[in-house]
Image 1 (cartoon, rainbow, N blue to C red):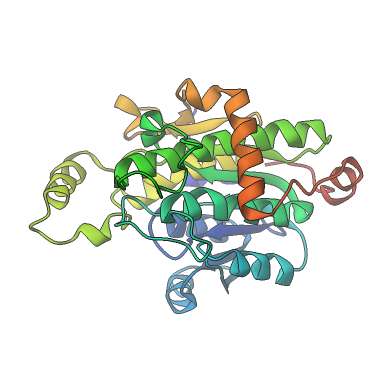
Image 2: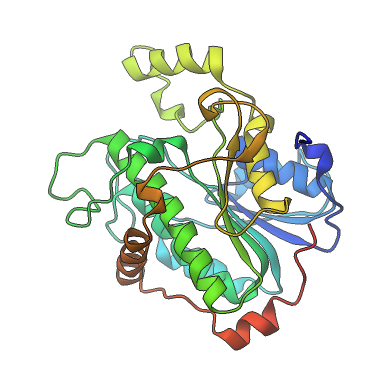
Length: 309
């Protein structure tokens, strides 16, 4: 089997790729590789100044647009102001184990940004998408549990890692149900997911207090076992361009899926629960006010570019 590297990216000239959170970490690495292969890349970022700084380090056609996934008004504005087709949407932005916070709508910050913001964004953009929707999850999804009675941690004492794991499980359930709905609509668009393994990114930058036990643990683990942002971005790129089925989940194929070349990997039993995926989708529609926006006729008309990657 051929090992996938960024050098195997096809010529993406004429393709448009939107990367949320593309100003740092694996999002920036993926965006840089895609732009270098000829794609027009749109960095959808909360801080445009940081986005422009990241774009300045990339070659090719790179645009920067503001998107705050913690505010549905910003998500709607981004979608309404976007013109032209999108070949690939990469739902990359995310938060990992921050202190308790709330989105503008009052959602717990991790489920709000990691899942609900991307859920709304994807559905609002879907009539423009022609090839793939890639959502970045995590191996932490295996510890995840969807608590429909307290999805936003308003009744229980907040616990950062279980909240994170819930959001990452939600990413995979979203991908599975999106794939089912796209197939039902006769759309050629594929929904896929990826995880970076153990990548030394800035997701845990808020733990930089050296006195923090979590910071000390992070330093000990990441210094020894993590891979670079460029390597951590490979599963995302693989899920975006490789000839993989809709609903696929890509990650490092090495020990414990922590590092190594990307390949299709397993997911937890909960992540394969179709009834759970449908229930979460319905709840997400209720919370965001956004529904699946792709009729069969739209699937035929909009997705006119074949997925030749």
